Image (cartoon, rainbow, N blue to C red):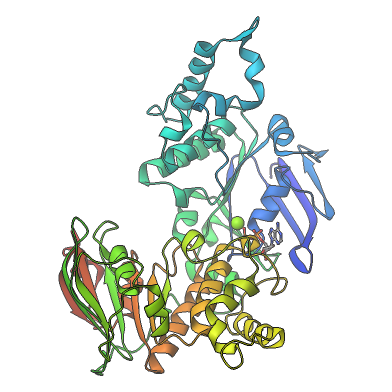
Length: 499
Ligand SMILES: Nc1ncnc2c1ncn2[C@@H]1O[C@H](COP(=O)(O)OP(=O)(O)O)[C@@H](O)[C@H]1O
Ligand SMILES: [Mg+2]
């Protein structure tokens, strides 16, 4: 067996009371793409960012090609042979692509008192060509690039330093098919050159496809490393969540709800260019799914039903005939809403878990309507944290520090704790791992049983088919089809009405 390029031994890391890594051993071998998988918060980013010099371990040893490895920063690590493409965007908007690529080394292009921009742009183009991103040029302003192109610039920036170990943290989720192929090609090239790749993703299919080995982390512990021959989705999932989980974790019943008490109704809703005469009825005790391509109008529809956007014509009314005109009337009628872009719309990231959850529930625990007691508030917030098993150090931790899945649980906690009777969920499981998804599906089923009405807007057909009593398909701002829950309904039946 070949010697590992990078060796990590007994790595420990804690953040106040959270143990992020509890003694992890991880090696990266030459000529191998090593996958790292685990639920949100399992420690993937922490272990890889320690290897790449972004933060320091509390305890443990690292070796790079047999020598002790202790980078002082990410730049230091990259210079010495380990480069990381981070989860959050790492480019600067106000300057050009070439300036981003050569940020720390502009002086390399200095000719007397001036910077030789032409040469810098030329070198930037070469670096971009090298990863196959020739649509992006060095002289372009960074602000002209979309999210995917920015990510590609980051990839070029790391790859041009020719590291021996490339760490890729949840980058592919930000990329389209084309962008992903660029990334996979880069990773394969590393393999061919006998270098190592550490690839982090929570997409099991993707990771099984591109990786040679797969290591599972759970709660800061390394659970198992699978070799390619051992790849088996059920076994991997089981080690990720620590108990058996069948491929199917949606509702198991196929009885569409037969209740007829109306919870919420949209009548002839139109917004030019977005919604075109949409009629929709949501009944108590029912889960209604809405599916379609991303610009079909379904996300706008969710906002209109919650009162966050006013339709040009048509109206939204509750079962007892009250009109929903704005978010205030929505809240008054116990309607909750989980936005697709949860970071900016649903959460105050810099505030604590406690503040985020407490705001929506204010009228529930405030005694006699206005007297807010700290004791009530704490009890209320702690209950939500326990009910949803939100993984955090305590209720006062900033939401910003939580993993994606746990942020999403805070959003749920806001609305569920308040006892919402109607929940409008826009892509509630986007970017969260299977364990959290399963918890959310269970919550939805429980709420349905309690007679609550749930509208789930989603870009994932399996979850729509798996959870909905009725599935409504939209295209170009209109409803094109409605399906009733049935065991035989398949993706193929539905897709035809979306495109
Ligand atoms: N800077 C930080 N401050 C406080 N807690 C953190 C910080 N970074 C990570 N954590 C916590 O450490 C645990 C592991 O996080 P992370 O490595 O980001 O997980 P993953 O990448 O697998 O989703 C989580 O519980 C997370 O909330
Ligand atoms: Mg992470």
